[in-house]
Image (cartoon, rainbow, N blue to C red; front, top):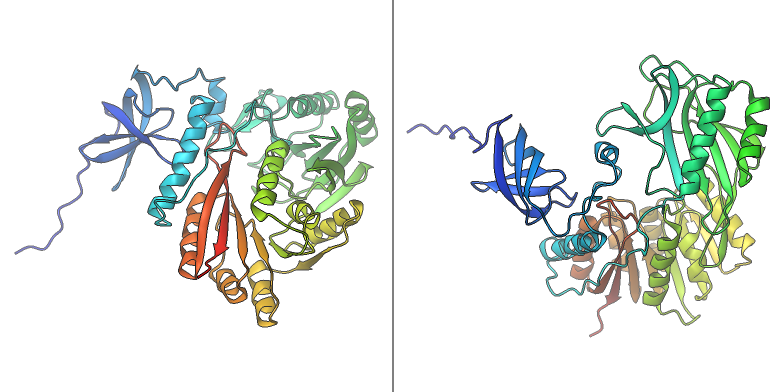
Length: 463
């Protein structure tokens, strides 16, 4: 008997057009149609719609379709702002009503809680959304290229480095959009050469703008290929005259042929390498490299929730792992006895110490190191904490970190996550180690996109 496996035959063919019913959305917000149980992912289609699509890719486990026509429209569909946003992928959910987006995000979180964490009864609260889900980004980094002989700013077409010129980014602070155009026009006036990626020639690579949501202070970063930027003596005064909010202009030099935006060298052109913003009444100094929450008002919603879950009385010792420039630790320090922050990036720790000083907060100490290593050291030393707060990168917590928590046995843990799937995986491990997951509160930090931030409250089981 031949043991050759039957060659996989997809029920659809590439470049052919089909009709199907959308019965689900992927976690990235793509519509899912099934033909003979074979899923096809279609960008721009919504649950409940009947659509016509052309198959553009056939894989073993799924296919990809291009939306041609919507035959039955979902009541949740809204008119898209502009085709360019779809081409660039900056607003993958712009065709879905905001209520629909919040429901989609809650479903996503419930889904991973059931499937990955195996917690079907875990209370997932409604997603905390924004009144105005546009114009929220306090930071922009836009590429500069030459198009039709002209210096242009805009956004890359998805999965490519072709620039689509764009003037209104919809999800950015409108003042930032205006500032980009002002800088672009000044650069055109003086004939500054836009970067050519293919040959690694030209000079101006990116324009970065950061603006304080509460302070209005603005920082401009000009990323260039070489340290020369001519005529700097005219460019700087022109920027300052046109944009009175600017407190800092930094030239960042990146000579490499790379996708990485910032280089190592920075030249100060005006002011200092910092601007200020506030979070829950604390003032933060932010340098051109600092990580700061992109959506200030929703970061305040998020941190207020963390404080509410923490229920601090003023007697607690708290560890804030992944403490960054101190945004969460300063909020915790107001209400706790002592806070220890852990952060791997040394300049961020310097910033955090300065921010603590700036706000007159003395009960917080910062340590440079990888969270998982420091936690192991501390648990070996027999240190204890009443509360551990974590806000890890997308990959979630290291096994070593979880082991250290289980060794240290804090009464409570608050897990802030930007990736519900790794949060669910880590919750399962903590539960196995004798903790219970009480509730999850999702927060919409990035409206019009498929990202969702979550806060989970985890308690030590009491017998």
